[in-house]
Structures are given as structure tokens and as C-alpha cells.
Length: 119
Image (cartoon, rainbow, N blue to C red; front, side, top):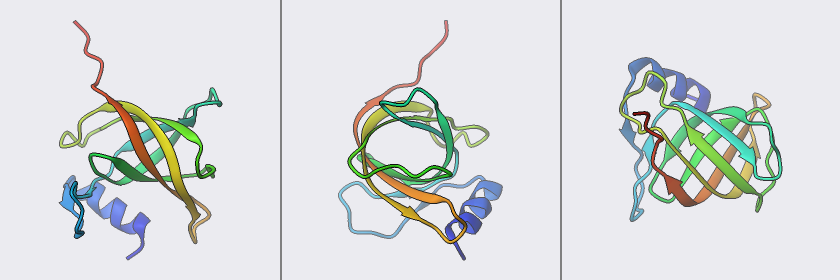
């Protein structure tokens, strides 16, 4: 099963799964919209979260991003209420083109901001 198929299945089931790994902060498989942009670009693009941890995330994008580029992100949890809405920034670690002409973007987060609240 490819990433897109797994992401769709996870989204349909509205579930949060732990990915097997030996990390200090384990990755969690989860699907929700991810708004992202390179810090020198004004236009926000929409991606699809694949997994995340306390220090980074992997998401699918229609746009290639250069490794080492600064990136701003916003998690928009949509219908999946198990994922917190948040914003942050970091650096692109790698960007890999997939068979379906999309890109898997891994980024290391250096700053995470809590969601804005309205009073």
C-alpha cells in the first residue's frame, strides 16, 4: 500500500497510529491538511500530513521544496480532532518525488506555536 493509499485509509478511519521506530520522540501517523510555504515565498500551499513527531514532520506536497530551505507550516486539523492545530517553522531536510508526481517533504521543526484562540 502506497503512502497516498495509507493516508486516505487513515483519514477515512480518522485514527492516529504510532509508526514503529526507535526514536526518542516517536513518529505518529496522522492525516490532516498542512499549509506550508518557503519563508521567502508569500503564497501558502496545501499539503497532506503523513506523520509527525515532537521535532519534525513528513508531508505530501504538489510542490518541490529545496533541502535546507526555511519553511513555515500550519497544521489545519480539519475533521481529525485527535491532531492539535498549530503553526511553526523549521528547515526542509529532504524532498523526494513520488511515483504519482507529488513530493514527500521531511522537515525539522525549530519553533512550534500554539494555536491562536479567539475570545
